Structure formats: structure tokens, C-alpha cells
Amino acid sequence: MASLGHDVVGIDVDEGKVADLTAGAAPFFEPGLAELLEEGVRSGRLRFAADPAAAAGAEVHFLAVGTPQSASGPAADLRFVDAAIDGLLPHLRPGAVVAGKSTVPVGTAARLARRIAQTGATLAWNPEFLREGWAVHDTLRPDRLVVGAEDTPQGAAAVDLLRRVYAAAIDAGAPFLVTDLATAELVKGAANAFLATKISFINAMAEIAEAAGADVTLLAEALGHDSRIGRRYLGSGIGFGGGCLPKDIRAFAARAQELGRGEAVGFLHEVDAINLRRRDRAVRLVVDALGGLVFGRRIAVLGAAFKPFSDDVRDSPALEVAVRLRGLGADVVVTDPAAIENARARHPQLGDEALRDADAVVVVTEWDEYRRELHPQHAGGLVRGRIVIDGRNCLDADAWRAAGWTYHGMGRR
Ligand code: UDX
Image (cartoon, rainbow, N blue to C red; front, side, top):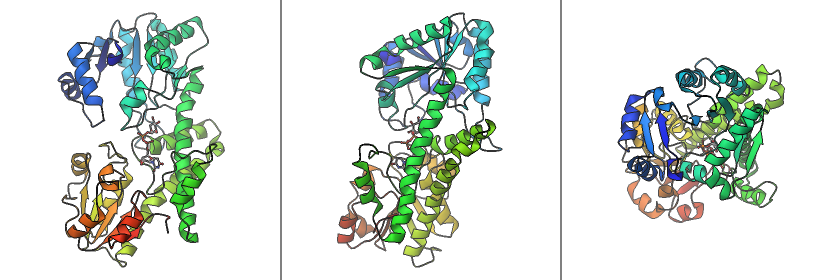
């Protein structure tokens, strides 16, 4: 926002984070973010504060706090959303817009609209679709912008204000869709549910391909050429993880249940189950490849982040596979180009220097460092056993086999 010329103040309750950001340091790895942050802080258009009073006078308040899964069940925990509104209430001026970006159960926006009504400010819902690792790109060049508002003059004014805020992206061609509040909230949940379903679909096909002696990567390629289907999100392997898709599909199903329409999205439980089965399958492949027992064997795990270009290890299938192999008594060494510090903070027992003397190599995050830059011949010189399990179906199987490796993909011949 600051890079687009807006005057921005970022507010967070975590004073340590505020101090780091004020010094221009990004709190996580995200390509391109550090440069933008530094430029924003240097220009004076981007400041940070822990006190919500710093929000006073703003025309637009973006609400972007997390909505994690509740400790007690699948539903979203809205504590941070409500706390942020509590903090904002005394500082909202009439005519200001509160634009919700957090992923919330449908119906939340209407409730928040009532909460802020007495201040004369207006609530709009403006879901966020960015992908980690592509956050800067997806923010500056979004596929679409969605704004939900009430059908009132205030609602229309809020939409106009957001249209001005996003003028650069709209000029660059991003469709700007105006909806009611509930539809805007649903778009986000539905988009994530669709993406998760697409990934689990191809992983279900991987199970079938494996049983039938077919190859799921060729299948995905052939399906993807059908323009009605499309190639993206047909990447098979150990499945989806991270801070969004897993918890969002569970929260979506939980909300549908509350609305009395649980059966409409019953398939999301299946999507979740297929996805979790992939982790079991990957562990089993490693065990089988090592002759039925991993106890005491040295296993190199390449990848810890839930996806490349990220240091995020929240609900990372990569890390779970590593931890489970370790639980079976293997000597597991994990490496990752960006996420190793975060991985170690959670699981200090996982060491590094991965390939040396490994009995098997397991690729679980498709970083270019492994996909393109790791040469099977070179890797073969470091390990004890030339066994590779490709949990992301991202390696050139023929090249690895040619270098004397036994290659196992997931749903590949
Ligand atoms: C997702 C949505 O894409 C984004 O629109 C939303 O705002 C937040 O949730 P993100 O979690 O950052 O974004 O990552 P994404 O790139 O969607 O990947 C999610 C998971 O799915 C990763 O673990 C990734 O490895 C996995 N995935 C993705 C596959 O297994 N196969 C694929 O083909 C694509």
C-alpha cells in the first residue's frame, strides 16, 4: 500500500514485531518484501505502532489478523478479530471504512458491521487471496479484487473508497467485483475449498495410478491440457499444508454444519482425509524402500517448509513426514533453504548436513535447490544408499535412475 503512494500505519499487538518492522526488518521470509518494507520505511509513508490510537484519523482500516483453528475443534477462532475491533472502536471516525481481510466464517462481517455501527464508520469485506511466497506479486497484481458491502449509501461510499485505494491494480486490469458482505466472505472460503479439492483430487488419482501401474504426473499433464480443467493445483505428492488450506476447509465445513448445510460440503472431510493419507503413504514408501525397517537408518529429508519460497512450517506435510520417520527410530537430518531455523525451533532433534552418509533421501518440498540444482551424480557421491523418495513428484526420475538411484515417486511408475 505504501509503495502505491498511500500513507500507511501498520498496527500489531506484538511490540517486538513493531520494533523490528520499524527498523525495516521483515518478520518472515517473503520474496520481494524486504525491499518494499525498506523503501516504505525510508520514504516515511510506512510506520508501525503497537497502540491502536495510531489508527485514529485513517480513512481505511484493513483488518488482517489471523483466524487460526480453535484449540477445541475445527471452527475458526475469532478472538483476534474481535480484539482488533475492540482496539479500533474508540478511534473510528464517521465515514471511515473498516475493510476486513481475515478469513472468517460467513456471517462474521454482518456481526462486525453491527459492532462498529454506532461510530458512523462502515464495514466492507475484502478477502485476501495471496499465496505465501508470492505475496508481493499477488498483492500488487491480484487476479481479482472482491469487495462486499451493505446495500446502503454508506456501503456504496465504502466501495468507492476501496476502488480508489486499489486504483493501480484496477488500472493494471484486475477485475473489481462488488458483492454483499456474506458473498464476499464466502468467496474466500469457496476458493480455498476448491483449490484443496483440486489437490486432493489429483492425489486420489495418484492412489489409483499407483494401484493400476499408471503415472499420475502424466495423467495430470493430460488433464491439464483440457482448458476446462487447467494444469494448476494438480501437483501430486504429499499434499497441502500451511496456515490456510487445512484449517480453512475445516472451518468452512464447521460453519456449513452450523448453517444446517453440513451435507453440502461433506466432501471436504474426504478432501481432508485424502490429504492426510498422503503423509502416511510417504512414510510407508520410505519404510518399504529401506526394506521394512527405518530404525537406526540415516534419512536425509530435503525440505521443511510447507511450500517453496516460504519459511513457513505451520502444518507442513514435509516436516510431519520427517518427524514421523524420526518417531520410527530413524536418524533424520532435515535441510531447507529458508525454513531450517523455524523447523529447528519446533523440532530441535532434527539435525542438518543432510545428504552425508544417508541411507535414503526424501524430497518433501519442491525447492529449485533440489528440483533443478541437485545433481543425482553429485548427491550419489555423498550418500550411503542411492534411494530417493520424491514426495513432490518434482525430480527428473530418468536422470536419477541413470545415475544409479532407485527412484520412488508418489503414484508414478
Ligand atoms: C493458499 C491460497 O492459494 C491463497 O489463495 C490463500 O490466500 C491462502 O491459502 P498458500 O497457503 O500460501 O495459499 O499456498 P498455496 O500455494 O496455495 O499452497 C498450499 C499447499 O498446497 C502447499 O502445501 C502446496 O505444497 C500444496 N500444493 C499446491 C500441492 O500439493 N499441489 C499443488 O498443485 C499446489
